[in-house]
Length: 316
Image (cartoon, rainbow, N blue to C red):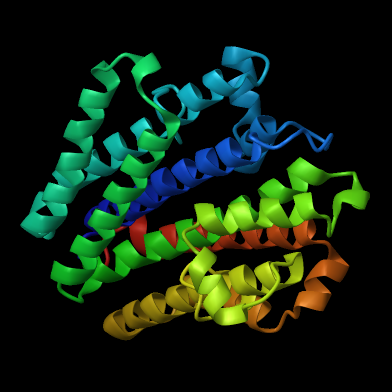
C-alpha cells in the first residue's frame, strides 16, 4: 500500500474519533455546568479548553471563556482545526482522496455526515440546541465505525484505520479523564464528595460507559473504580488498556505483513506494558493528572513512530 493512501485512511479514523470526543467533552461541560459552582481551579467550560489543549488559541480569538463562544469554537469554528466541523470536513476530504480504498457504505457514512454538517451550518445558531449537536456527532461517528467494521476487508487499510482510531481514542480517553483535574484542583476537600462522584458519573455517561461500568463493578461509583475501568480494564472499549492492546495488535499485523519490526511496534509494546503493569494505587500515588499527561506524551511519541515507519514514504 502506498504511504499516502495509508496516511489518508489513518487520518479519516483520527479525525472522526476526535469529532466524537469533542462532542463528548461538550456534553460533559453542559451537564457539569448545571450544578452549583464547585469553586474549583477553573470553570467547567474553561476546564474543557485546557483538557483539549486549545485554551490559548481560544483566548486569542474570543477572550474570556463564555459558554456560547466555547460551543461555537468547539463545534463550528473552521479556524479551530480540532472543531467538530473541521474534523468532519477533513475526514471526508481524506476519504474523497482514497475513495477507491473505501466501500460504498464507508464513503456514504462520511459523505452524509459532511452534507448534513453543511445544512447545520446554514441554520440559525439560536435554534440549535447543544444536545442535538452532540447527539448528531456521536451518531455519525458510530455509523462510520460500524460501516468500517461491517464492510471493509481486513487488509492493510483496515489496520491503518484502526491504528488511527486506537491512538486517537486512547489520547481522548486520557483527556476526558483529565477534565476532572482541571475542574476540582486544588480543593482536595471535594474529593470523595457527592459532587465529586456526580462529576465522575457524568464523565461515564458522556463516554457511553455508565451501564457497562455498573455491569463490571456494581455498587457505588468512586474515582478509584472509574479510573480502573477507564485505564486498566481490557473489557472497557474506551480504556487505555483496550486502546494500547489494539495498537499492539494492528501494528503487529503490519509487522508480519511487511516482514520487519519498526520503532512503532516497540513503542506500542512499551505503552501497553506501562498500562498493564500499573495498579490503580500506583496511579493515584503518582497523581492521576501526571499519569495521564505521561500517557498522552508517550502516545504522541508512538504516533510519530507510526508516521516515520509507515506514512512518510512508500511502503513495500
